[in-house]
Amino acid sequence: MKKSFVSPVAAQRLLSILLLIILPAKSSCLFAQGFNLVDRVYETPYGEVGMWNFSVLADSAKLITTGNSERFNNWGLRVYESLLSIYDLEGHKLMQRHINLDDCVDHNTLGYSNVQKINNEMYVMAGQGLYINKRAWAGGLIQPYIHFFNSSGDSIKTVIIEDTLVDRVIRGLAVTQNHEILGIGYESTVTGEIATNASGTTFIPDSTYFWLCKFNSDGQLLWHKSFHGIRSVADGTFPVKLLVSADQATYTIAMTLDLGWTSYILKTDSAGNEIWQKSLQLRESLSNHPALEPSSPSSSFDISPAPDGYYFISSTPYKFFETVGQEWDSQYAFYYGKLDEQGDTIWTKQYQPYNDYNYNYGRQIQTAANGDLIMSGLVSKMKQNGVTYEEHAAVFRSDSLGNIKWYREPMHYTRQQNGGSYVGHSLFGLSLTPGRDGILAGGEYNGFYDPFLSTQPNNGNLYGWLILMDSLGRRCPEDTVIMNSPSPCPPVLFDMPTRVSEQESASSIITIYPNPADDYLNIKTIGAAQLLDGSEITISDVHGRAIIHSLYHDGISIYVGLIKAGIYVFTINQPQKGILLRQKLVKR
Image (cartoon, rainbow, N blue to C red):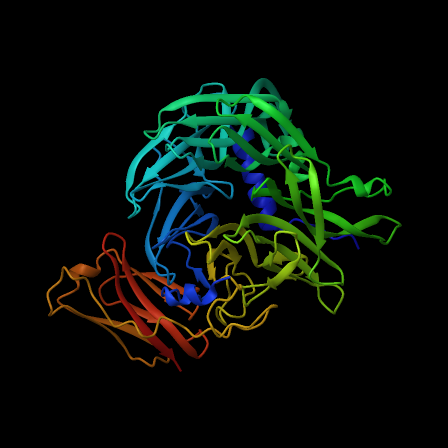
């Protein structure tokens, strides 16, 4: 049986992107700094059906993520909104908000490097929105934006790059030493040609090209360039990362073409003029098997700086076999190595953590302070029944010559195939702490069929997740887990006292009862009823996964009879004032 590489979640996201185009080693030091390294899955914002983290940034005192949430609008259609979130170093949410784009009917942020720090008080993220009213034909216009925000997450300004004929998308950012901002993405020109398909009449993009832009620190567009020599078929130009040289004179960009099957490097000067370009044909080993055709865009490609060149990670076939009907299929290995300053290969390695039937897809790579490589990806492993696959987010470390030091699957729950559908988690973002001894990873988690969440039916919401690890890949000092198994890390939420806003008087009291609870949970307030107006109520497990969501109203009673017996965390969050109450809840 030939295995499909793309989950419905990934396929849906890819479809939504195309529709946007068409329709328009010092571990003890880390713990000593106060990190409590427990993996956490964050609840979906109330009223929304999904969220995921694409880019993560580990700052000195906070963790920043950018991604998307999705909800149904008044017409019953799914719409996407760019989402900015900030957490403390223990993973507690400090703020979360959508990016406000006037007159935009749908917007998102894509890519794995789409949030960057400019200075201690200013950060920048990027995305794009769909504007119906800016181009009446071709289903609207896609325009990219960069959004500046301060260290608290408050908006400073949003700059939209306007055009009347060209759709553009930003998939990554970089910041120079003098605080100039570089954006990498792609543009699609649209013809007047009309094609009719099963879903109706649409306009078809003519061509998709790599696109590079530069802003000053105030967000003023200095220049932008289209590289018509770097054209992708099937709208598959996906820039991943831009590196600025130490002397600030050159830029090196990693991207994938042809829906992920061609890894590509471009080097330019500081004005965006091409110096050289190289293509890494990772499919060359397929030449002996002409009947084997890729099933999906399974490969990503990323680079990080090396002392005299670049390190890279991707995926490559390493094993071939014949399937039913004499079709060829292959297994994929993590493929990583080192390139010189001209993009030529110095050495390469293949790594597969399991020897049986499995697929390994490289995602991100970072260079540690001592020159080691920190790499991430996705592992798909066949279970013993020979039918069902488990998929795991993977993080592993090698020395500067590619020799593996350790391998981890940091999430303690799996992504499984149920009835032909993939459910579970994907890893997108990877970032190192400022001292480069802590590893932050983030992505999405699909709650469908999750036995950890509840005994009640689950609607399959997507959740964003974050994991902070030390230099050995541990989530806490007790963590010796390498492969997928229950987490040994102790919960960290239970020592937090009951608290209300400091703005309220000492007589303001919020109480939940009964606790322990059997069937219904009630909320009692003394002098705090007004404080709770518009508050969100969340009951989460010890790892932060939301099980029950509700909005507060006077006299509210929450039914908890269907959730499993155990220990949970009850939280009341007021969007304008933050967390008002966080308390241990026992379900009998």
